[in-house]
Amino acid sequence: MTGAVFSRAAGRDLPVVAGGRGAELFDTTGRRYLDAAGGAIVVGIGHGSAEVADAIAAQARSVAYVHGSAFASPSLTEYVETLGPLLPVDDPYVYPVSGGSEAVETALKMARAYHLARGEDRSVVIGRTGAYHGNTRGALDVSGRDGLRAPYLPWLGSAARTTSPYEYRCSFPDSHPNGCGAQHAEALEQVIVAQGPQNVAAFIAEPIAGAALGACVPSADYWPAITEVCHRYGVLVIADEVMTGFGRTGRWFGSDHWGVRPDLLVAAKGAASGYWPLGLTVCSGEVHDTIQKAGFVHGFTYSHHAVGAAAGLAVLKILQRDGLVEAAAERGEQLGAELQKELGDHPHVGDIRGRGLLWAVELVADRETKAPFPRSERVAERIVAAAKERGVLLYHSTGCANGTEGDLLVFGPPLVITPAEVTEVAKGSANAIREILSA
Ligand code: PMP
Image (cartoon, rainbow, N blue to C red; front, top):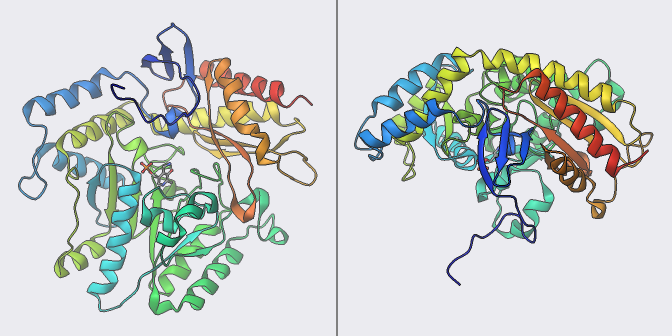
């Protein structure tokens, strides 16, 4: 054998991609697809941007790589100065890495380093049920996806877990419709107390759970109540904005919907829109000053990469110049309304939820009881395949908050998607659902 790709689509033949433009992709047979998931909710500014490609080429031609401990790089300085005012973090310091998992690992280490520098031996990080924060060991440790964690449990450590705000299958149904933030905050407080507040370093969560649970928007009182509890016990708040950052939910960052000011924030996906593997860990000035004074020893060969910074800067300028965050809010309203119109009455559509251009459709065997289909039926995977046949690319998840494994279709198209394309996505995916789940 001359060498082969370790495929992520074991046993399936994949079309061969030839190119892309905006929200469209083309394969080598000339077929057109609408990328309604931006790959894995990655592509914000759209495919085929010559502007970003040129910025990457210019930086690579000038100098592609210097070690971050040896040189400052003008593109990185300009990138961070442009990004800083948009970040929902006080006096932000940006540590650029190569993706979401690395960004999460970096944030976890920063959180522990912060407490150690202050003379407190705190190590426990609290995550949430059903959450996904990455596939490396530390990130998997703070994730709440039991299926992903199970084979590696002997390697996983000390993370604790609290409830997820999952309105459709809420842990506190009696508190609706007034919101269940207080109950979730109480549950978090119980976990902190059980662990011993002196041991708890941080709480990590997505502002809007996208990765595993599919666009779960918490009630308005959730984030204020959660951050109050964390700060009362000296627990740092880590906002995982890998999916929700850079305009995805119709604001620059998901935290902005509630005015949350996290101590640490991680981003990736939309940061360089897929043009470069860029992740960011952002810490507040207070965290930065504390850990730098004590000496924070960390780094990856490719952190602070000049080409990554050039890609991120070009993407950021396009997001700003073309008003794509506002566009995401508008197109998102349209997508939500059209999904509701197409699927609101379908007997196997349990929930349609989202914000900005991050939406999910949760499929159920029985709308009354909300019982999911047996996972062995692979309903979501079959619908994704049927939608692809119709030229609409979706993402699926088997969200499992509150112990439930289910079937979720996730929508996260490029923010440049046009109104006509939004309609194509809603109709194409609804037809795929009807084909697989005839009423
Ligand atoms: N956190 C969240 C919320 C994510 O959605 C993801 C990726 N799906 C990650 C972390 C991990 O990012 P990466 O795959 O770039 O390592």
